[in-house]
Image 1 (tube, rainbow over the protein chains, first blue to last red):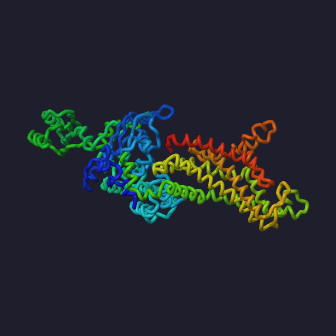
Image 2 (cartoon, each protein chain N blue to C red; image 1 turned 60 degrees about the vertical axis):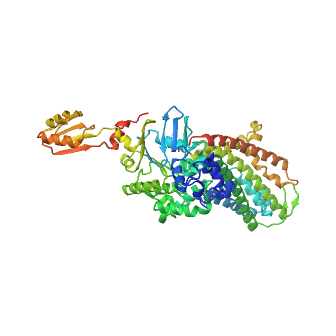
Image 3 (cartoon, rainbow over the protein chains, first blue to last red; image 1 turned 30 degrees about the horizontal axis):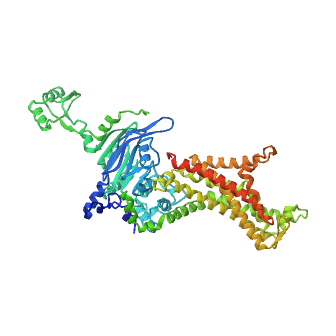
Length: 348
Length: 288
C-alpha cells in the first residue's frame, strides 16, 4: 500500500467521512468534495503579519485565499514579502500575528499533518553536494515520518524520471548544472501524492528550455487536481499558467482573484494609426470616449462599452485615412505595474 | 478532526510506526556522518594516533632507559588502549565530536537543507532528538575506534598476558579487556556531554564553523582554568575535569565513586544543553 491511500488527492484525508453525514458518495462526488476541501481553500490566511526583530515588517495584514484546484500565481517585486509568506505557510517562520491554514490545518501547529501532503520548493534548491541526486531524495524521504520506505525506491525513481533526471540519478549533486539542480528540487516536491505544491520562483535562473519544461510540468500536475501555489516575478510566466493571482507590494496584498477579473480592472483602449490623428481623435471624442489623445500619427482612447466596429465604420465614413486600427487589451504587466508601481526603488 | 481519524484507519502503512520511521531517519543521519569525507579524515586520525603512540613507545623501550609509563605499555599491549585514551581525551576526541555535533544543525542551515528537512516534514523536536542520537553514535564509535586501533597495535607490538593495574593488583587478560570496554563507555559518555553542548551551539547559529569553534574553545579554556590552583574551586564544575576519571577502571576495586560523579556531571551538562537547544530550535525562525 502506498501513501495515496493515506492522504492522497482522492480525498480520504481532507473532507469529513461520508458516513458522518449518513450519505454515501460515489467516487465522483468524493473527488469533487476533495477538490472543494474542508474550507474550499488550500491556503487561507487572516491578518497574517510578520515583524522581524529590528522592526522590519515583511508581511503586513495578509488575507490570502487560494482555492483548491487553482494554479495561484503569487506576484510581487523582490522584497515584497512573498518568501516570508511562504515560509510562514510552511511553518518555518512563526507569524507575529494573524492566522494561516494549509489544507485545512492551522500552521505552524499542524505542520506534521499538513506538510506530508504538500510539496515545497523554497528559495531555490538546496541539497548535499557530496550525495547523488537519488541519495538526496532518499534522505528527504527518510525525513518524512509518514512516507513508506518500501515504496521509496519506486517513488524516487518516478520523481526523477518525471523531471528528466533518470539518467543523472547516480551523479553527485555537486556535478549538476543549475538546471539539473532545479529539476531535482522539483522532483523532491513530487516524492509522494501531493494535494498542494508550493513553488517559490521555480524557474529562477533556468534557460528558456528549462522554463518551458517547468511550466509544462506545473500544468500537468495541476491537471491531476493538485493545487499549485507559485510565486514569481515573471509576469508572462504567471499569465501563461495561472488561473488565479495575488499581487504583493511592500508586504501587503494589493489584489487577488481569478486572472480574468484582474484584467477587467484595467480599461481596454482603441488605437488608430493615421496621418490625420487630429481628425481621428475628434471622431473618438464624438463617441464620448474618455482619455482621448493624439500624437505623431496615432490617436488613442479608452474604449469603454462602445463596439469597436462602429468606431471603425465612423472613421471611414468621415474620410479619415485609417492605416491601422487596434483594440488594445492590457497585459498582466500593465495591471501589475499599476498595482506595484514603476521603477527600481526598494521600498521598505 | 476528521483528517486524524481517516489517517489512522487508512494506514497499514503506518504500522511501520513512529519508531521505524525514526530509525530510518537516524540511519540516514549516521550514513551522512560516516560517509562525509571530512568526518572520515577525522576518524582516520583517531585510528592512526594510537598506532603512532605504540610505535613511539616501541622505539623508546629499546633504549633501555625508559620511563615508568613506557615500561608499563611495553610490558603489556593492552595498556596501550588506556594510554591512547588518556592521550586523546583532552583534545583530539573532543575536536572530532565538536566537528560532528557543531555541524549538525548549523551545517544544514548554512547549506539550506534544513528548510527542506523541516518541510518534509521531519518535525523540529524529532529532528533535534535524532541529531543527538547520531552524535551519541559518533561518540561511541570514535572512542571505540581509538581503543580498537590501540589494541590491534598493542597486540602486534608488545607482549600480552595478565594486566597489572594502577593499584598493583594483577588481573587476567580477559578481565583487562572488559575494563577497556568500560573505559570506552565512560569516555563516550564524557564526549556525549560535550556533544550536547556543541549541538546547542549549533542551534544558535547558521555558521557551522562558529558552533565548532565555540565548542573547542570551551574545551581548551576549561582545561586552562583547571591548571590554576587559585581556581581549584571551579574544577568540579568543569566538564573537562571529569573525562580522565575513566582510569577508575584501572583500580581494584574500581573507583566507581569518582566515575559515578563524573557520569552525573555529564548528565547535567547534557540535560541543560539539551533543554536550551530544544527551546531554541523548536521556536526559532528558519530563514536560511
